[in-house]
Image (cartoon, rainbow, N blue to C red; front, side, top):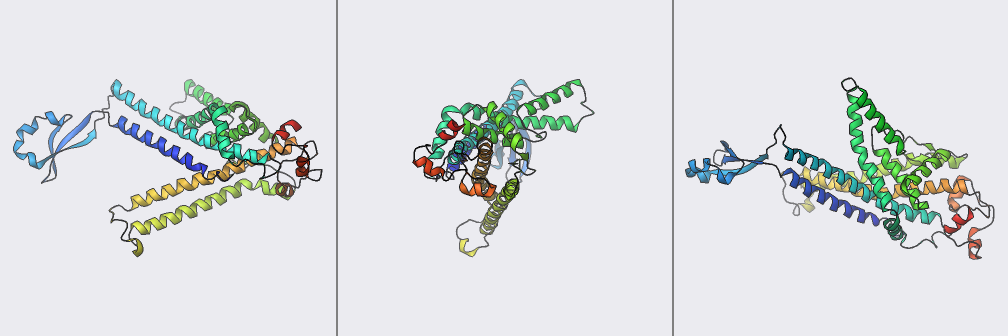
Length: 400
């Protein structure tokens, strides 16, 4: 699967297009109000008392015709009245709506990428002969399957993530002012929000939408494995994790408490993975920030002739550092998807199979050695070569 890492470039391109669309629409909406123009004296740098919303028809210009060369008409601000009219209220509502759509589309692009990667990793796990029987374009196959069958599930999951932000704001407002707004209506709304949180199977996500993202990623992995709808997949994942796992205190990663040294390794998987990824991101972003600071500040003699002298050199430094953070986050998310998907596949494999000839383990030999498990017959690959299995995950479904 050589296209796994490069697949994130498509996701980054989608993010850039969505960000450009949202920024352009937001600017157009922000500049659609009534504008305020003022005249400035260029020589003295003083503002005149003349001001108008239509500078071409300003009567002051005829009185100051002798000073036209000294005056400069500039846009100062867009007038915002405290007593909002119906049109201005619609503009504010349009801004909120566009921001919600932006969050939804960004979450949709992330969900599409996550499900395509999860389909590729699950096809790798549920294959006996690794990597011989794994498709070369497994990620593209997963993307095609997602686009054909599971776009509705991705849209519904991304809607839950986008809705987590306003729910978070409402809960924060109701919790920060309990005495002033403590009545039956607010308590009823609070109970409804709690019910909504429990309905989407997001435990302990009272004050954050981060756990809803983790829950959706788990559902996407189950959809990639079984091909069911979103609600059934998130319920199956929740019940599987409830039967086989405890919750790790780090990053929402679920771990299994197995006997032996393999159980200890799996139990600390979430902490080790998050810690290593965090250190890697800090090292990369810190290195890029330091290098860009010295280059744009003209402290490196070899690069002094390339960047021009800047008044605010911290702006390109911050931009480059943020771009490095986004790129490292996108590529590290591939590793997170792989770990979460393989972990769910491992739980499913341990629950449904026992290592017998009829129900063999699909995990690799290295993983079986770590977990202290083994198949009860000699070689699964030899059985596949004899025609007893087809070497793919289809044999897993028929063996159940």
